[in-house]
Length: 335
Image 1: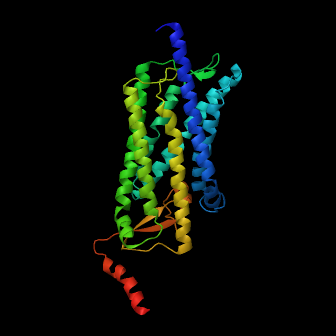
Image 2 (image 1 turned 180 degrees about the vertical axis):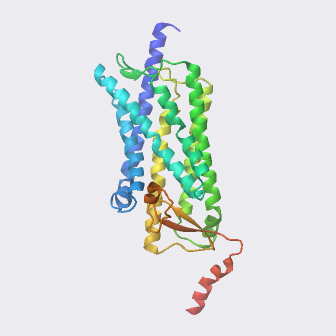
Image 3 (image 1 turned 120 degrees about the vertical axis):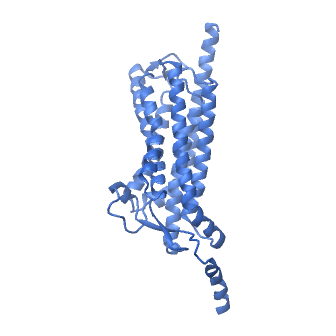
């Protein structure tokens, strides 16, 4: 490839990379504006669970800061500003990866009946992208080039190392999400089926099931697509990453925030309408998202501050659902 063709290709890649960054940031801000009313009602005005609200704020506003800082390097800046923006952006990007990983680990730990092995496996797998990006960070120093490239990161490591670390990062992220969704399926299946067949009311199990599936399959598709593109060596030359990764963080943060907001909203509806109906003798004490109740003394302070107990029911094989189904008939007869 001639030098002029290489320059043209480099400019095209930078322009595409910047355009994708602008598009994802715009979509994230648009979703933020749409959810601002619910956020004010269920997060800002809520007096419960400071740790839970902190997790929401961390995911939402750390992502917003990350995307804003990424856009600040599109325009020409001085060498000093370029160095500051790049390295501070790297730090914010690393911190931005922690929130969704912690939320996934908490979901796994809580829904698995406080299984430390599963919760720890989900946390370790979910934090692998953080560790991989931290390893790669020192190999991507800032470079303030002539427009339209401007302030960018230049990857100085080997292609083989970058590909290997990328595969490891995406694979571990898929494992973490897979652990969480399997635990969610297993923990909510019985009660979700009973509630679906007999009642029409807000259900936290339904929120976990629906949002968990959307999160898992969306992130699974993006991670698998990125693995395929990395394997085919379709990557951005400046940082050896496919364009798909630009969409990964904003989508993950958006889906995590929607999960938390839906849990807050459903819990508020349940509180206004009374406690959830007990369908069997087998209950799950779900310590999550600031629900009133007691917390076991052995719980960690952070998990305890996330919530009190929600008594969620699981269908017991001995439960006589005919009794439940006969209640409306008795009420009609009484009238």
